[in-house]
Length: 300
Ligand SMILES: [Fe+2]
Ligand SMILES: [Fe+2]
Image (cartoon, rainbow, N blue to C red; front, side, top):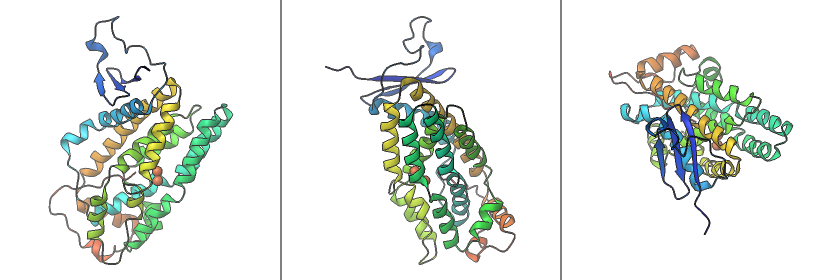
């Protein structure tokens, strides 16, 4: 009988993620093990399997988000925080095809056509997603181009920079970990999340094109499944790098959530107002802060 695959990756100085093909995942602290008896002290070298690779990838996301989940609840959408999230969605989408194609060219130069082909396919699939966000903003009666030209939510900036930096590296395998992190989190959004947004939009307004496509209802689910299969097929050193970057991206994304969550509606509205330099449509500008802190969920 073939032995079940076990994979492991050290993501911080003191935490390794260990995952079995059967679905078991746990975190391991090397310092808690006696020197010389830690079986996970040396990097894994064996082949991957989808069942264990997904455990590592999702374990990395859970670890990166560990700090946020305890402190902040999932906020209900308002037209204001949804608008900020759409602007963020535009910025995390607009350069994706170009960045992925650049990374693909590098893998062709490195003699890794299979990685290049995967990234080219991803680049094709992601093309036009920035336009979905623009259409949604326009549907809400906003001057979409002006808004995105003048405003990048603070919590989103480090995420965009991370992806830009990863895609120009000499060995840009980390861009797969970044993309997985964003797509996996987007795929968690369900029909009820879409319905909540639809319920607050004016009658006849469809402002959920981006959200539907980047949720459990859209193509994101397939993208996530295909990425798991692909990462599982990579050599061990590539899988290690992808999982480590998934963790780093989750940390950056969680920090962005924290930043945006702590803003009030009034602060977010002021940022939008400043960006467009003109009166916002009535439905947005009539929102008032009721003293509660509600923020935008940076959208993937
Ligand atoms: Fe997308
Ligand atoms: Fe996607």
